[in-house]
Amino acid sequence: MLQAVLTAFKIPDVRRRILFTLGMLILFRFLAAVPVPGVNREGLREFIQNNALLGILNIFSGSSLQNFSIVALGVYPYITASIIMQLMTPIIPSLDELSNEGQSGRNKINQYTHWLTVPLALLQAYGQGVLFSQQTGPDGRPLLTGFGFHNPENVLPTIATLITMTAGTMLLVWMGELITEFGIGNGVSIIIFGGIVASLPGAVSALFQGGQTSATNIIGIVMFVAIGLLTIVGIVLINEGQRRIPVHHAKRVRSGRMYGGNTTFIPLKVNSAGMIPLIFAVSILVFPGLIAQFLSTSSNEVLRNFAGELSRFMSPNTIPYNILYFLLVVAFTYFYTMVIFQQQKISENLQRQGAFIPGIRPGKNTQQYLMRTLNRITLIGALFLGFVAILPYIASTITGVNSLLLGATSLLIVVGVAIDTMRQLEAQLVMRNYEGFIK
Image 1 (cartoon, rainbow, N blue to C red):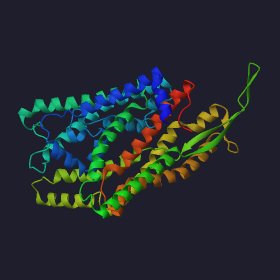
Image 2 (image 1 turned 135 degrees about the horizontal axis):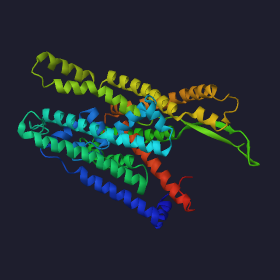
Image 3 (image 1 turned 60 degrees about the vertical axis):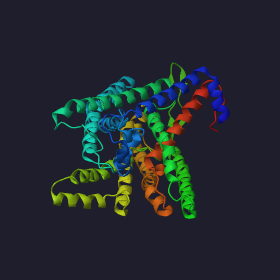
């Protein structure tokens, strides 16, 4: 693999792509260090560490949310807009028609996704600003000052902050698309990947802080690392696992020549949903916690007591929370997999091409056969995703070590992006008749 990477740097075009990707990541890290005015950075960092949803948003922002930088929203509004467009495409006839028009239709849907990203970014920026302005850090100072429309003096700074953060999101999306076109890998995923990797040194340092000379702590850390390595292996196996359905193409004669007659396969992935079920589940689970945080500052004692009970019940360190988290991830894995499968219209495309699965009638029977097969293999992927989701709680219970290194979403993103980038680099080498590094 090392020899292949050295060979890649000797090829001008591949070297230019790699350096362009690295340059975009360096620029992103510079932007992530520029905070908006009035931020209590130390208090904000501690507040985010104790909030599951904000922890997820911090991951998608490339760890720039903890600084509340000009790119603090990251690409999460764009990801949300993409998910909404995917779910709405089979429901809205006009979008469904666009999805069947090839590349031009996909470009139009992508344009709609960009338009939808702007209001979502504005709403998210305002919601985070209001939340942070109502919270105080350990030193008693507000996490964010000078934000809100209730004071006339803060109106212009608030509008400027909202526009700046929305522009930061669109800038990151544009940089991601540039990486996709001129660099290596999927640009948006690479930006998230870069943010997670940049936060690893701090997570490793925190892992060894506090009682590092204790033999019990050392054993716990070793067990924690072993669980992490086994989880990475499992993620690779599940993400790469697929059921290959054989497809036979009928022979056809055109202009005196014989076409078709060959056999290919349909790769049904064990985990077709990726990390999307985790995002759905966390967003639903932490919503009551956010409501509790807003109510905790209420002047009504009943509301404050209710907020305290709700916050304790929905704490990520409780068994009911993790059981519900597991069940939601499994349910959303099935839901999103079915949505993606319906959009692909595999049985219709096979029938149109004159292809069929041996022993299965084309059309409705093929659709039912593929659905049954997908349901069976998705069970493995759904249970695994659910296990990975609650793995931090299990690992901390067993080892007594709490760390962000085993975050389910972080692991899935890092491993998935690494595999995808290696494949694209491999393809660049193979195109130029060089031996790759994937055996």
